[in-house]
Amino acid sequence: MTRVLAAAGMCPPGPPTPGWLAIDDGLIVEVGSGAAPADAVNAGLAVLAPGFIDLQVNGVGDDDFVSADAGGWRRAGRAQLEEGVTSYCPTLVTAPLDDYPAALERVLAARADAENQALPTIVGVHLEGPFLGGAPGAHPVALVRPADREWLRALLAAFPGLVQLVTLAPEADPGFEATRLLHEQGVTVALGHSTATYETARAAADAGARLVTHLFNGMGPLDHREPGLAGAALDDERLTPTLIPDLVHVHPAALRLAIRHKHNVALVTDRVATTGLRVTQDGAARLGDGTLAGSTLSMARAVKNTVGLGMPITRAVEMAATIPAGAVGLTDRGRIAPGMRADLVALDRSSLAVRAVWLSGEPVIGSVEPS
Image (tube, rainbow, N blue to C red; front, side, top):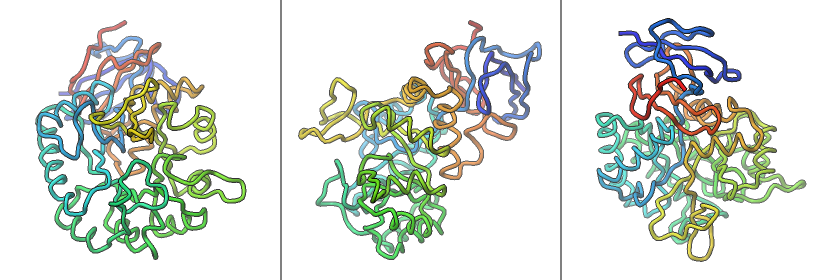
């Protein structure tokens, strides 16, 4: 049965304008502007946008995705859904190689459970490490190691289609053999936790790298004579940098410069489980020595902060949904257009708070009564 949703503002593309969309069998089948059909469910003054996609989230609250049980995965999924996230990549950080298979088995179970529990889609795992370089940040240095191409090949064979994204450092992959393997296997390669030069980062892009993990963090500084990985991320159109807009990891001025300079920039939360960490007044999660270990940012707050930088709401939504989807090859979501999954979020036009969320056209959070 076809259902119709209408709102005073829909985006992207373009600025929020009155419109409506028709949903059938979980997909958007038609999009219109102006007055909605008489039988439409009206979201009133809300802004209707595609559901957010978080490519880097390590855990939520007390639940770390490395060790969470079924209840923990459900709690974390529900918490993200309430903040507008309809798809995400659970992120596993640096660990001994022998620990990854068990963690991936838990992700497989959680992904199957999410499909039956009206929870955000787990589109695939993000392995952030252990193949990192000269800027490990909060990753345990003793476990950081050179890229192991054969280990990766075996892991991908054992868990087909589960690993979506791998962050590695170019200096950990001499000759870019692991980068090429991952790219050939359809896994998105992100460059990060690296002190690679501009030239080396560009060479990694030649080998198939397409993302840069949390721009400005976990990499050498942007210098006018040695631009480094940050410079390559901003200069090479093949690379999509991600940004953590919690206003702690990156100064607001640097966020504005990156967003205004380059179109294909994606927002991530780098949210972490806070057990054992120190959460400071600015909302950052830190190790005992003060090293940033991640954030407590939600994607809804990331969008709000981006708008607070002076960006239009359509730009913030694009960076939270459309660009992340494209960066990892998700062609069925991230936009309001015919043929896309009807994963949607309604945002309060003034506060940008999440008012309602739909998964495949089914309401799962909140209300859409007219304002």
